[in-house]
Length: 73
Image 1 (tube, rainbow, N blue to C red):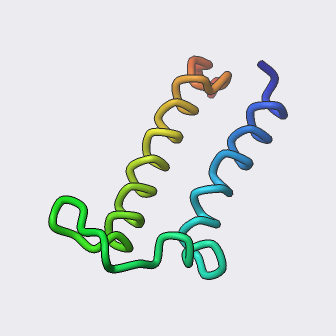
Image 2: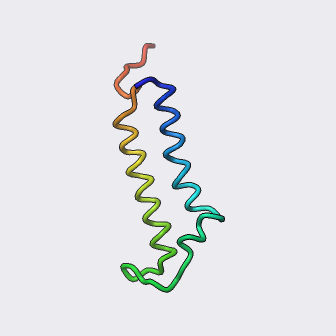
């Protein structure tokens, strides 16, 4: 995979979680009534997207084409 393709995939895959945590799209999960693991749904929504974003970054790190290159000094 080329560096430019990887960069595009990286940026696009991190835009979605960001948009789901800011104003217009946060209203999807902005409810208090269903309690999940003792938390209101809005708190569960934020925590779950933080975990999902971490997993996305972890997978993208493993796919990084420049990860195994050694620096030349």
